[in-house]
Image (cartoon, rainbow, N blue to C red):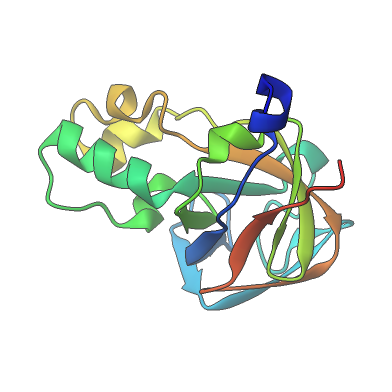
Length: 160
C-alpha cells in the first residue's frame, strides 16, 4: 500500500467509553449513556447547540487521558474535567484528518484539533495546561443525525 492508502486504512474500530454534555456555559459536564446528535443543533441538551458547526462535538482519546494523568503524576483523570463530549478508546483520533466516520448511527467529520484552554490549569492542577497540549483531542461536525451510545463503535467510512 502507498502512503495515501495507509492513511485511510483503519482495520479496527474505536469504542465510545464516555459521553458528557455541558448543560450550561462554564458548568460541569453531565455524564450520559446516550445522546442524540443532529446536524442542525449539535448534541441534544448541550449548551453549545452547534453554534459553530465545525465544533459541534469534541472527542478525546482514552489513551491520551492516561498519558496526561501520567505526565501530571495522577492515578487517573475524570473525563468531566477535560470538557470534551466523547471519550474514545482504540482509535487514533488525530488520524481522522479530512475523514468522515460514524459514532453509533450518527455520521461526523473531523474539523480540527481541540486545543486545551486555561481552565485545564484549574481543573487538573499546576501544569495541567501544558500536560494537555498535543493531547486535547479533535473537533467534529455532525453530517447526519443519529444516536450515540456508550459502547458504540467509531468506524471510519471507507468510501471517501
